[in-house]
Image (cartoon, rainbow, N blue to C red):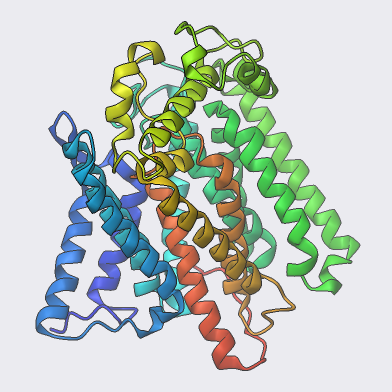
Length: 473
């Protein structure tokens, strides 16, 4: 039997889809092997898939990667990043942490690149969108169930506790909230960008309701009051360029849209008031006090007296601790002559200040994590390629520049762009993102959309793409 990955119906294509589902479910399906390592189904399927691919390339076929030439600059940057991570072990304070971090980086970059590798058509693109949708639906549906029953999964930090906290398949609330904000643009835009029956649109509508409810009950201020509004503003700004003029000027469409938005707001608000009795209402209410908390800190940690005091705006320690984690991280960066402290070694450097920072050693900011670990060069390149990806997605999403692409690709490009824009704030919420698979999956989907979309533009020579429809199953 021919085991060949490049057919949409091939065995490796199926294994890829399964791996993506397990990647989203994270540590939920896994067996603890050591206190610091869990053998998850994602890791099993990842290495099985990688092994089969290497076997194919070594003994049966040459790798067919010509189509990925459209993103060769991104692949080149990822290769440089990995090489820099390996070299940085030579000056890392704790090489063991550096090796572990580099392995995670290799896995996540490989996960990211499997999307443009396997997705070569609209059919395979839609298959992965469908997989992500149903897996995410399970995640937010369990979050609703968890908020009512307080039954937490073993992966949750609240496992075995009667805590009014919602983490679903993740370890903490912030990870769940960030995953939701990455998902929401795909759901919201699907309501008007893709054609489908009442059942299909109803499931998308229900997923949005569940997702917004879970976002509120997590109490994530960064995602609820910064990432989500930023995506909404970006969506409104790009709406006139991504929707045909006749549809945009139709008052019927605006009435339908207003009805959907109002109904979702009412349902989510009702659920939040009736189903959840946690303390996140007070936490969310302090969101705009974050700046007051920062004003009460110092930019120079040498001037800090070492005493943590509740912020004046939020009346809590979270923002203050995050601020000093960032300030210590920037000090480590300067001490490294801006070359970075070495892969994964922010935590090693932060150990000396653990007691001052309420036992926190991770920098709790993905952008700062890249900057401090790998230095200015890698960080600058990461930002450049991030912006470049946003620009390429925008060109595919815009009607004027890409009339040739199908509505499915346009929807994928616009949704991916908004999700990555929201992550500018969302990336400041989780404790670390090196193994935060939802972010890497969205990045991979964005690269795949670029590959498929730019191929369509090159092949169709100005002809309009056909309509995209929601599947029957």
